Length: 139
Image (cartoon, rainbow, N blue to C red; front, side):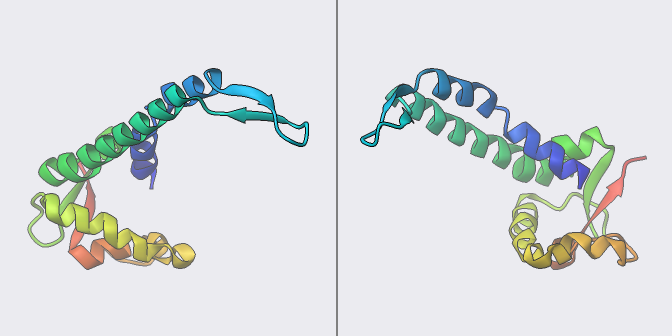
């Protein structure tokens, strides 16, 4: 869970630039009811769109490509963890890593899939079970 949090934080880095830029370039005025209003500028909109594209690129690189080829996302590497095939211990590959992230959608109802490691003997999430992977501590 900590590794995923770190992965999310890494992917959010473009917003450290885009958010303040959009705020400071926004047009401020008054709406038709006389209430203060803020409307993002065209430049702010483009920077926010670029940040979204960069965020998606970071996510694809870190969670799918990097983790699929090495077993390590930035978050997993920082915590000394690695994603491995549940039977062979080898890296799972890009396709299964993508499948694992999509299988995490099944974890959402009641967060049951994320809690699964609490009672699973191999500490696998539900998504790990679906794609036959396991997160292991590096030696």
